[in-house]
Length: 489
Image 1 (cartoon, rainbow, N blue to C red):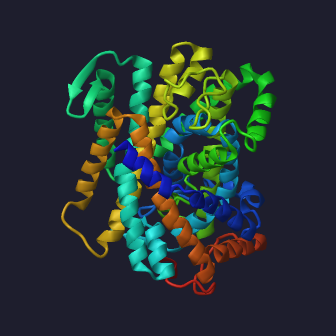
Image 2 (cartoon, one colour):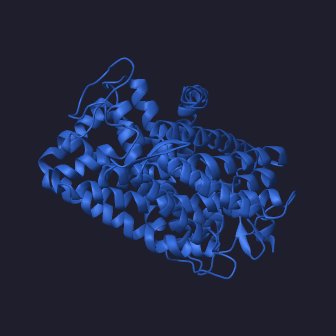
Image 3 (tube, rainbow, N blue to C red):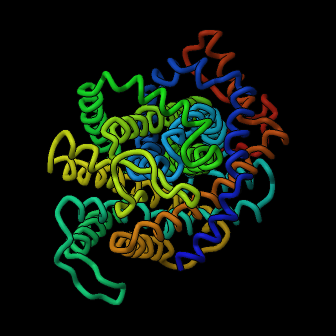
């Protein structure tokens, strides 16, 4: 199974996708005149500018749902894997893909808002919706919707839950084991799997509003708590920070594992973590109640900064400062750091050992708790994204209890991922991310050449902003944007 998954990944994550993600980010950065820099203050001011309604959630709630998907296992275990397989220089490429990806995040999230629709009393939208409405290719939209349901409903949840299980086992021990049909499983992992599935089930069966209310409380709490802990370690070793930054930048071009490995792993884990271009962010963006589509696009662009430049960087600095890592690939068995290869790089172990050097045994426990919140809220976001794509398909074809089936399958995937090995879980997750990224990035590039709807929305918003209007409006017909039916109403 592992060999099959690795072979599929070699095709999905070929160099073509790596450079497509980077090139698309640069392309849209230039076209928007680097909106991620020019309107940085506007992004922050927009966070609390809209309120929840009966049909939609607020901008901050949409940001929280989106961040719950972005800030997850990729920020802890994903950063460790980037360093372990790509060298410290991979972090530089994570920064680059985040900076450029912020422009991509604006484009796809603005499109999600422009082409959203009302479904059974709540806003729905995402790549499947804007591909059908703006491109006019329903078959392509269906391919994206089905791929996304498989990715976030079955493949990606295994990664998040696997990291929860591994962190719990490292923190609380895994000596007592049980023979099962799925192999040998520790009591710790089994208890963790049951607990996560039970709590997750209670929330997702409560609907989208409950997901939004949970994430708007948990996401800021977990991100701030983790950042405070990371900053504490960095401050204690502040004299080493300039050397670490120099190592990251210099290693990005002459890394121990080769330039290709640094770029490849940096972009792969960067896209996995911040999700820019992946097509997941537009689902949450479309659910928000805003006066103009560009507003939520800007808010979602800011979420990429929070994810990678803040949280991922904090993890990387902790690991590199404490030297709790190794770098390995087929050409270079072991180099750098102080850990040995019997510790999985595709796991939270690097981060747990880094905190242990400062906090003792509590370090592993803290990471396990942080990872639970990080990964758990990501699972909530995955369910919401899968539900949105089921709702899209349900417009044409439906069968009784489709959402109940989705919930049961996702919970089963979570249970399976918690007790299985990390390499298989990450391999399955990478396939899911890669499929969505290919389909969505190609889609938003085609839409640009067909009519530039997201660019037109940005220019319209800036024109109203410069004119000092008190209440923003959006008229798609006046801008030459077709099939934006919600905004016509």
